[in-house]
Image (cartoon, rainbow, N blue to C red; front, top):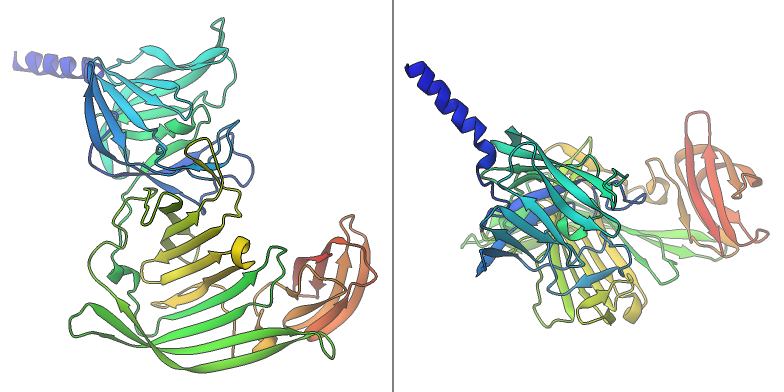
Length: 500
């Protein structure tokens, strides 16, 4: 009898699992997601190593509405990499997050999300397997959601009962039609919100998001946590509006000693440094002059256990006024030699706007600053785009480091001068674009054949070269793009040369 009762109880539990109301949000708890799929993306769009790879779902307030509750996400400015058809590429001051401006959670199990146009998207959190409903209305049809199954699933280390909701588009006659959303599955867990969802603001452009492990929010002490014998190398370069620029400068640092102030509120590093400064000199014949500096210096960082950022990624920050757009984003860089989280803060003063709140991002903002940090590496990128007021865009970035014996990036040997500026595969060409002449810095110890081809693949110049550099005469060539190749028995290097 007990076995019969136990079996009946289990049957009752599983047969009514679909009737339980699964919540679409988790209030007051930040959840981290990452972009996993977008079939409508053109080449190069939203790749996984650039802007806003990691996004946050965070609901910090709510209000009671008729028959339900309205939940609000934190305010955020719209990603410039995510564009809606028919809209300008812009940033919305106090605009909605990727989940939309708010979510209406109704008592009858209906949950309404809203895209950028204000169109509603319906998720039924109390559906049962086999149930279907109108998920989204198209101009000439609709997208239907169907609850395929309820089963246990694991995502980001969380195991929970989860609904698998499939999407399919139909035309106005009810016939299935092709649509980028067809076959996508939303996975809604019982107690932890979505395991897999879409960027509702972007829909019907189907940006699929997957729950991931929380990203640790570092402190200042985490960011500036260097160890003795850590090594870092940076490149500094400036561009003007026409992308003319001098050769880059390089700086190398090695940590010799680490100490803390008496109050433990500052860390003091003693560093060995080497700097290489290159100058293009056209006389008596075009060449690069180099200056090497070396010595020992000290740098002090104020540190604490407080979070480096006090907000979640993509929140708005307006330290001065509403014309200043300041936000912070996250991404994870993964490579065979090094993995790291990158925390990026951007500040821009937007001079143009359309409507009341949309600032045009034409990438020539009056002022635009980007600073990127990584735990244990400090400031890894510092860019000041002042093209519209100072006629330059200057950037310093970390190009190589060796931390704890783990090296990452491309090391440039500075102490031997020009000969080893490019001691890894690649060619340096200065200036580029060029007028009548440019200097080609050869890879170290290179001897072989140089060839210059036009876009049609025809050879326009060829020569046998060796040494550290070669002067390339472009005076007899027409304006355009050419392909430069250096080749010998063991290696081949390629780059572009622009004749203006």
